[in-house]
Length: 400
Image (cartoon, rainbow, N blue to C red; front, side, top):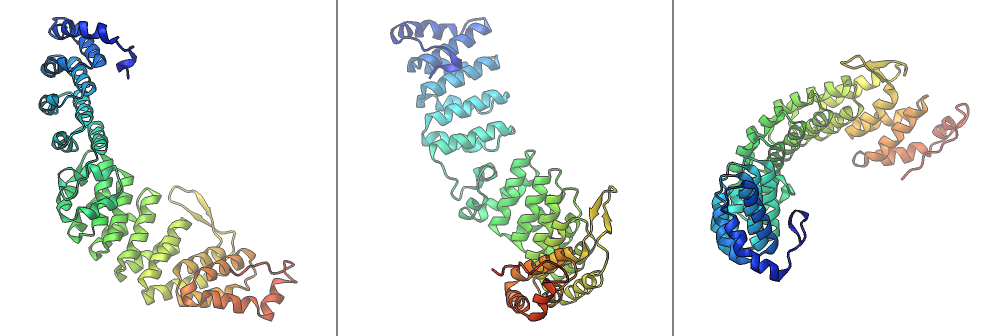
């Protein structure tokens, strides 16, 4: 394949030109040296390996980069040592070209240098190193040295194969400059399940990148340690909705009753329907009876409120408030026996949206007798009468 879009050089002509081009690598003109390196890469003659290896120390970064690219095209293992040294070049473009060249060598001897490049200060170099290692077929195994960026680019579950040696490097990477690395490290620590990482992951809940904060919350849910409760409660008030949702869900997985009051307040006061539902599901998982009772009582007390009332958000935006419908969805997410009793009563509500929401919620509460209650209620005479006249809309709910 031609390099830089230049046409290939005919073999006979190329063979005659190699000596001249090698000599041109020492020319006083920078442009001439670059052009010579490009041409030698297109020719691909192994005679040029030694001269190109020397050119990796050229004063001009463009010449060094061109030499690395040419050595990658030639693919001769004799260049490995010089390319490994060039991995310490001050120019990230040279380091990136060097990584590509080492990857093209395709042998086990290049692995150590490529693994070291996974910790390069430049994210583009790290990505190139990860891709090159993929091409060689390298797997990190239990060597934690290169796992951090590897994990940041891949499925976090891969860390389960590596185990505890990865914990220390991953914790250190929570302060990496690249948000991809921080996000990958947080997710991997959650999958590893080492509770010694809880405090470090909880610290990532205040990361400047919202994706990192979200991943940290999800990881804390996987770790399931009560030490994360305080940080997750604060995260439910994050500026980003996805972080709030992840924090509420994580509190449910942690399962500590100390989080119940904060979750209850979110369910009752928050204008975001999705966050209220996540908080209700978390409360259902925790199963704190006092909080469940308070939630059911307050939702029942507001059941007769007018649906014209609106929530006013922190920026003054208005949210439609349909307490009957919304309350039914919340009770369905709560999935508690007390919620079932309330929802059964709401099946004959005067608000058709509330009736539908109650029916759907009961259908979802399989563990608390919700489906049985729905079937019983839907087949009773008073329910069939109510769903016909005088409402004017015959019953149309299908039990699945």
